[in-house]
Image 1 (cartoon, rainbow, N blue to C red):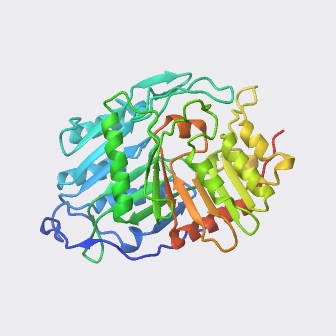
Image 2 (tube, rainbow, N blue to C red; image 1 turned 45 degrees about the horizontal axis):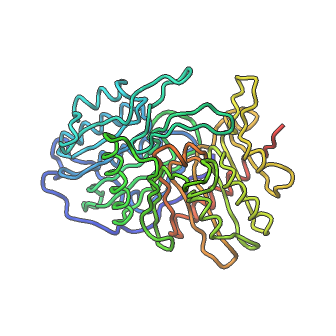
Image 3 (tube, one colour; image 1 turned 90 degrees about the vertical axis):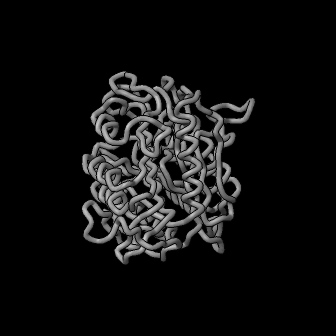
Length: 418
């Protein structure tokens, strides 16, 4: 297991604690350490610490505050119990679930105390229907994304709501103050999956506003025909934080598997990493050929490129080789890149790397930047599904992910195809 990073930073927004949440009151919020709500990075090799952090934030929510949660999947009763208590003490809660969870036990329990009326301050809504896809159940669509698409010989698949973030407007701290504008962003679902994951919690008004805008669009399009050309960004490239909201549609005349309107490709192309610079990729699935082409081009310019993945795309239970073509190219002899794999196969550690981040340092004198969020480097993650990627230029946060990436590169085994 890679060691967890330390928390840094001071709160950027505090307020007096509401009298209704005074100490000793029944079902009062439980304070959380100030260190854990601003510029905090949590690394884990399984989900209990991630679930515990999300639960602690919910438990600290103050009466009259708001919580918004778009969730792909969760199966922890403790999260439902904490949401129920928060609702009972006057917290307004809005939850958007992926369609494959429709009428499952989690949805049923949430409906019982949140209701389903989107005109009310609290509700649970579901994006799409629960449909069968082979042996699995999936959503018929995302909240915004509705496109059906297949690449690398895949059958067309459905879009989904793959988000895993939480925004909170009031979080009680152990020093007695209340933090506003709290946003939790994670690579992890709130379940029991054993995998390398991370979560970032920041107290920043712009980040909170950007994610609130995105949630509002998720909420709006949940009951519309969607918007497959969503292509949304908030903030400037030079800002401390910039948010990308997916899906991104290619330009007219461009192919769906091209790099057209791909924000990751555009960033890699613009940064143009060369000698003295570095790119560190840790992403669960790497499928997009245009991203891989940029990584290989950077390596050939002398940029140091490290790549770790957690899933090659191949289903070992079938006789066919479904390995992502782009990943094969990335690991080929002529790429000048060593690809490493931490996967579920015991030969590759037995614990998959489920992270979705990239650290880019364009040259020796440049400050590194981080891309982190919910999105895999797949066509589904780019063209179909509801995803978020936050671009971060905060040195304290980025340095922790540099250490994380280097740790993966040490412990994960080299992978080649064939």
